[in-house]
Image 1 (spheres, one colour):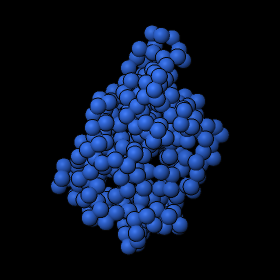
Image 2 (cartoon, rainbow, N blue to C red):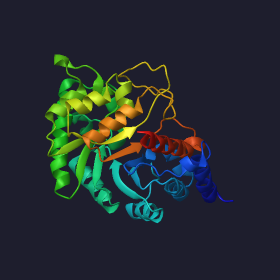
Image 3 (cartoon, rainbow, N blue to C red):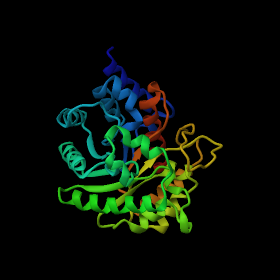
Length: 305
C-alpha cells in the first residue's frame, strides 16, 4: 500500500473506530472545516494524500496555511481534485507592503478564496525591513497601544483594497491581543473599537482567547456581528493563562479546558459562518487522526444538543 492509500485508509479508520458503528455515520456539522496548518507535516510528506484523507472524513472546506510551496494553479488543482474548497487563507497581510499585498490577493483569487485573514499583527516599522526579517522583529518587543491602533488603521485600508478585487479581509487573534494596554483596554478591544466593520471582520481563535485569559463567549456578546469565523482548539488542564509566547499541550476535543457546548451555542447565535478545526502540536502520525477525533466529537455534540 502506498503512502497516499495508507493516509486515506487511516483517516477512515480513525473516524470509525472509537464508538458505535451507527454513531460514526453522523456527518460532521456543515459549518466545520479544517485549518491546513494542523496537518502541515502530513502535507509536507504527501500533499495530495493528506487532502484526500481529509475529504474522506467528510471535510468540504479548508483554510490555507502551511501548504507546500507550489504555484496557485498547482495548489488549486490538488484542492479541487480532492473535492475540497479553499474558502479562506492565512496570509501575513499586516507585515506586507501594498505591492506585496496585491500579489497575495491575486494568489488568493486564483485559489478561489473569498476571504484572506491576517494571522498576526504587524507594525509600521516592519515594512522597512526585508520580508524574511519582519517576523523576528515583530516578536522582539511587545506591541503597544499605538501599534494596535496602527494595525486597526491598516486593516481598514487593506479591507478597502480587498473589496475592490472581490475579497474580504479578516483578523485572527492569538493570545497577545489580550495583554492590558494604557487606559485599561487590551489590544483586541483597541482593534474591535477602531476597525470599520465595513472594511474588515474578525476570526476568533477560541483556544488562543482562553490562553490569553479571555472568555470568547463574552467577546461575542460584547461585539455582536464582528466575528465571521472561528478556530477551534483546546488545551490540557491545568492551563495557566498568559499573554506571552506559549505553546501549551494540546487536548483532544472533549478532554480539555473549554466548554464546547457553551461555545457552539453562542457561535450559532452569533451567526459564525465557518469554524476551522486546528489542533496544536501534534506529531505527524496523529494529525489526520486528530482531525477525525474533532469532527466526530462535534458531530456527537450536535446530535446530543
